[in-house]
Length: 143
Image (cartoon, rainbow, N blue to C red; front, side):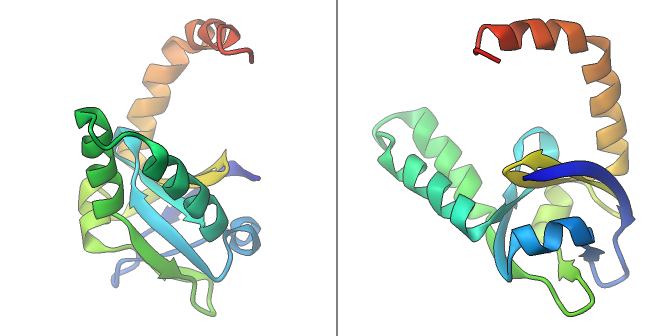
């Protein structure tokens, strides 16, 4: 399970250092794709395959399913971590997430999210202002 928040920077070649606590769980190869809320999602291969199977089982005759699948899969890249614990973030994903230098890497259970520091700051300020409302709505989901 991925947990925690880490501040990092993109190097001049577009690489990030993956937090050491995440490397083993992420594995040798993993998938990065466009996430929701303008962040990047990183999935271990096993988790990616599970999501892929779920998406493939949905009816492609529905426009919303086709749109989400196009968005999700077209932005995906198979990635690896080098010996120094770094990985190259593809340009299309950096542009999508508006990451130019400072970034935040967070663990979100079964995935990792990479945010521009500015977007993460804005998101957390907005979420904190309605945290109790969000928590109350989670009760309806059985949490």
